[in-house]
Length: 271
Image 1 (cartoon, rainbow, N blue to C red):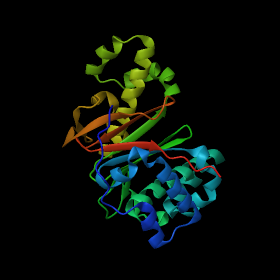
Image 2: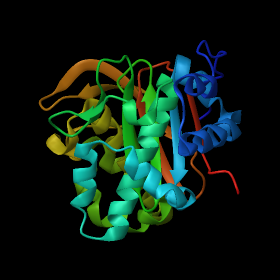
Image 3: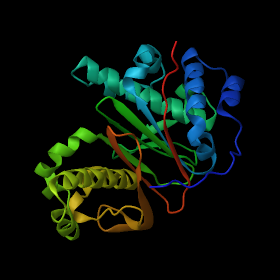
Image 4: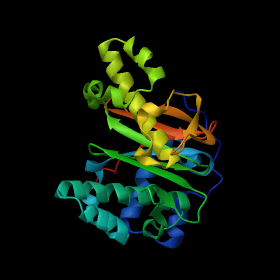
């Protein structure tokens, strides 16, 4: 959907703030990458609204050791539980990129970001008026940050649409079934995947994970919907917005109604 123009940022540039506090070589590379991607308005969104930054993990693999060095003990433990080396590496990169985004937005060192997880595993920034969400799948990561919460983001490989018919009953609310049934096969597959990422984004914004099954609520695009709680709504509305992440990906974000939104892929600069 079209994204609203963003007002000029009221915060100091992230690069300047980082220099005040000192920056690792990795953080310097990240600043340059962020500046290169900022034609989409990420800096203004960091101050005024909601930003979603996408990353291809392969871009950042050369900086894996630096990513691992900035993780806290709980993050390192979750990475270590992965059985396959590649899965552990991907998770370390996802956590590191999450910290780099938050450090840039908050103008502090990435390893100093007070990032934790609540009882249901939702990432949260302790003591700060910043809400965040993380999604990683098939070699890519999406990080969402909002100055006014809640926020939830989800992304999936577009190729996954071929598998969605098999799990349609686990996704569709009764009121959504008729509309999906009326679509031809190829359109239905894409619509099912789009619905999946919207529902995942909504659950992440609610912070309840899989405590609510997807057939129990609706997730229309671009219309206010109640934020689900474990039992019923929690009294707030959010809007679900599809994000253009390129033809190979499907992505959605849940935000407060009217929140300005900017998104961009952040690629590591070529050496």
